[in-house]
Amino acid sequence: MLNKLTTVLICSRAFSLPMTIMSWLVIFTYSALVAGHIRYGLLALAGICLAHLAANLLDDYFDYKSLIKQVGFNKKEYLKNSQKTKCRYLISGLIRPRDILILAFIYLAAASIIGLFFFIKCGIGVVYFALIGGIITILYSFMSKIRLSEFAVAVAYGPALFGGVYYVMTKTYSWDAIILSIPSMLVTVTLLYIHTVMDFDFDLNEGHKTVANSFNSQLDSLIVLKWLLILAYVTPLLLCIFDILDWQVFIVWLTIPLAVDLYKSMVDFSANAESIPEHKWYHFPMENMMNAPSFMTRIYQSRNLMIYYSLFLALAIILALN
Image (cartoon, rainbow, N blue to C red; front, top):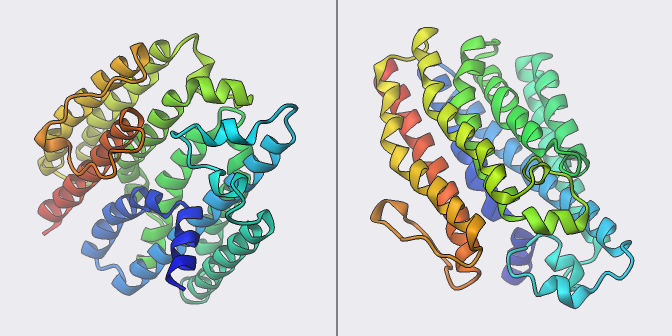
């Protein structure tokens, strides 16, 4: 039973849930401090996580179908690519494509039940946010092939998540919640963009059109990363301008060393994909470093930046609103 559960979690890419949980934590903290319904916020997290896992499975399923249709597709060569976990369990035969669809349906059904509960308790507004999330969940695999994956993640983890959680916790719409989502959304998109930059050649070979491989080289594509990071540290000013938070929001600037190191690390990667950046005490945690250390170090750097940024932003909300 435990082995089956582990397999399900691996196939669902449950390791990617921290990006959902951290984004949720920011708006949950804000909503709770303006007299939001805490239990509804926790239930919303469950629904969002279920939708996220379903999106992962559907993305892998459609990628798998696309891969096996390619002329000359070599299963063994693909599995040698240690940087990829996507589709690995399907190509290796660990689980059948049909089972992936069933599991995705179960996730979506459970998320829909939670959505129905919120519709009954909170009103029609839930439907609007659920529709946005549902469309992105189903179409993400297609969107990721036409340079829209960053846009999809920005919408899902920005206005949809922040606006939706705030609505179910307070039963009201809020432009403040949408504006609050902007800095958090930018660091989430940064995490995704790091991945697509490192997959530059792989995605080109697979015929995937991404924002990163729209440029002539990995190094050229880092201009987008540079601006994502700059905006992540400039946009907190909006929270002061619109009187959402006060000066406390600038404690997120304590994570700037992480952002600078991440950018330098990606410049090194573009020159030498096997390079391993220096590990500093504030880079941790970094687990499972035996598997693709060069690739995974950058993934952990970007993940940890998002975690620390989100925690500091949540702390700023507590300090400002208490």
